[in-house]
Length: 385
Image 1: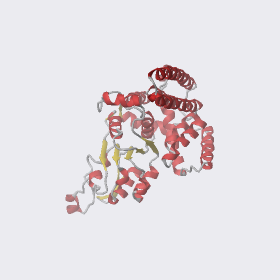
Image 2: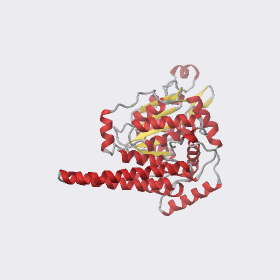
Image 3: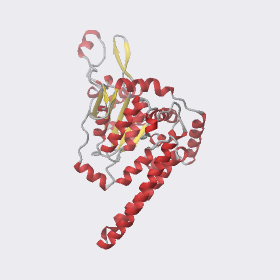
Image 4: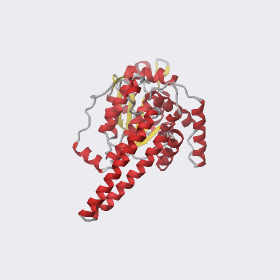
């Protein structure tokens, strides 16, 4: 996902134009969330699941609700799970009348998860044992198992599911661990890190639910079901992914074969957002959202995916390290006298201006070569803060 140049916009699918507008509005409103927003958007296009890892109070739910409110006509379901919350709160209550009259064991599902297109379950690792099995089949197979007029299951219209938690769910239960393994896109949402963004958050209101740029669900569904699966993955991309896999294995990072296979849909989604009919090596950078198993691997996976896919994005990562060094120097100056602080401030501001120019050059080069500008934009957001 990037901010396309004016000449490229006419080549983009109308849905891609609308989604880019949504991304830009929400990335501006939810500071330090451009990466998670991009990951969620790509997961939706790939009809895949998302896991948001982060502490309470980081606006995860508000961000998700706002995002899905921009998909007009879609049905959205949201709740918080706990060990004691029964399946009825998520899947709908049993139809006692049908059980009494006909012996059918089925649920009244209207308004519950099995009738929705998108869903978010917070504290997903804490789902009860009785919910776990049915939830897995709904989320992963898009089927609700029940007995209804001789049928053993019904199909559900779910496109994408988002689970949130402040801890990895692998140790919670077997069902939670199984769900974690099958949630393709994984992103961390932490407290705001930059002072400027924190100050902005204190005084600026978040966007109203359901206002701003939007996309009709019918148009989005047509893209998800028909356009994106038709995007080709050429041999050079496959060869680069194979080389990335070998490099990661040598560093003891070993995603499952299933995860690699599912990740190819994310590459197709990335190509769609950039107006292409086939994947390029540049799209491989989005695998930074899918190939890590524990948070300690995130930075390493990001560096490895960027190094094989987008040299401009890797340069942006280097510029981010420079920005972080400037930030540390400014913090060290706090205890000094005002004259020394002023002199250091002049120097650091000058270096930040140079950094901004370098970032602009990196972004422009990426645009001219048809590459994604997401990482340069993330770094620019950080440097501005």
